[in-house]
Image (tube, rainbow, N blue to C red; front, side):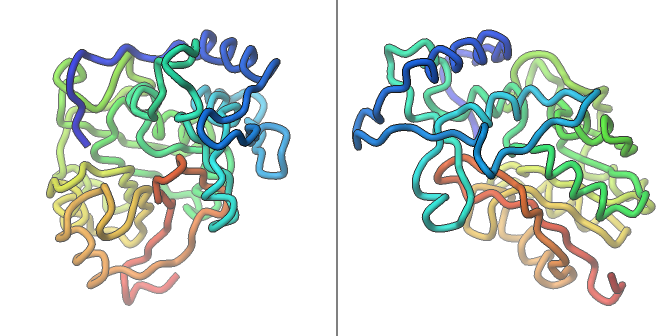
Length: 261
């Protein structure tokens, strides 16, 4: 996905959390349906951040109002930024773009981190297209070794805002071929761009974690999903993954066909 217009300023977590606290102190009905808001925080879908770690993205996401579609159709609560109108203090992200550009285009919850670690069996991660390294930072806090790469300089990258979260190295879709001993992570690969399929083709290991939409969605291109279908099989899906309302993002583990589990 590309962005247009003026550069987006990164979110200041403390300010947004303070504004969200004010919102929940006197919650108002949704401006179109009249429905009163709900949130992940305090619900049975909530996930606690482990002591000694930080996840400001999740701190914000769990306090956002949630839409009704995900809970009704898929059994998960989906944060919905469209609750906030042009006069709200939270209008700076009346869509998800500012959140995604500050943190990551796919939400990583504490449950996601624990699930990935449990599936790795001690292996490390290689992540091309890591952006500002938010996923890499989260996984590293859990004791997972991550080699994160990004071909774009932060000043020329329209998909990120603010300061990096992790020391991301310069490198493109060729980098996975240098890490066959690590598991491959692809997080929300750019829509209609070939680099995800190129990275997958260059990877010689046997385990892939993919966070994003499926075929026909807003991630990668057809060649990626063709290669995924031809050479990989789904092994598991993260049970605690959270996505924005109307965004069909899942976190899925794949194993190379013929390599076993």
